[in-house]
Amino acid sequence: MRIFILHIILLVTTAVQVHAQNAQQMQQDLLAHLQHIQYWRFEYSADDTTFSTPVSQDDSIANANKQLLDYLLTKGKSRQMLQAVFKLPENSDLKITTSPDGKMRIYSWDAQMGMNTHYYHAVVQYETNTGVETGILKEVPKQITESTPVGGSYYDIQVIAGNNGNKYYLPFYSCLADNVTKGIAAYSIDNSLSTVDIFRVADKSLNAIEYTYDQAANYDFKKMKERYTIHIDSQKLYVPVMVGANISGQWLIYVWNGEQFVFDKNAK
Image 1 (cartoon, rainbow, N blue to C red):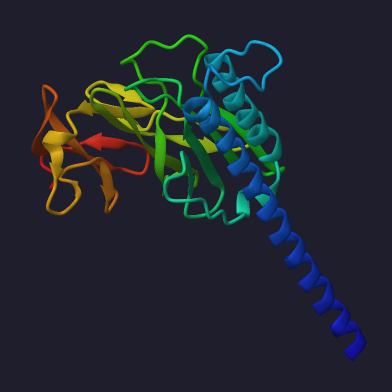
Image 2 (image 1 turned 60 degrees about the horizontal axis):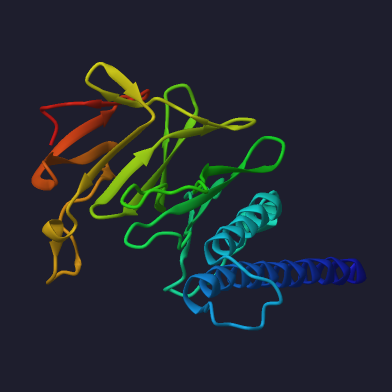
């Protein structure tokens, strides 16, 4: 009996060590891909003579992003990667955001393809009844237009339960151009990932709400944070009221009724 217990302990210890090693390797892979993008964006020089054939900086940046995109789509179909704890540098262009229940994770990163405008790729991992799947939430096209952002950096995922027993996953995202765009989207997970129209705005049901504003006018430099930003509290969705590109200091409040977030002018 003692030998059997020792054998089980050895197996568990070995499995933990292998998991840690694999997670460390995946983290190193992610950092290598990010460094590859950084090289072509910031370090490459047209005077570099180490290349035997002519190279295009723009094409090389796009290709480096494609390699990271493909890596996440392929490698991400493992529960181990979904559960791995990655410790990337704070200044990393890659943002990894995971839902509280651990069943959805979004990888979003600045493609470094614009000048003042930021363009983001985003890959989602999610756990279904049959395993872990991946998909593209946002992909930067080959042809981009300056001042027209694509995608966003996903910084939070919240989960809310519906009356029908379903869970809805609510990722928050932000995108920086001349102004800032912030928003929230809604998804459900079954055998696949699906958008769901749970935001009731006027007479329409939408799967996302977003707004664009002047970040400098909404920033408290003493507290080093924004004054007003979209958020959920006590099953109420708070969206800043806009006056042009400025945030008014008032809120549009949508109350969760078990099926949708519905605007309630009397809510506080």
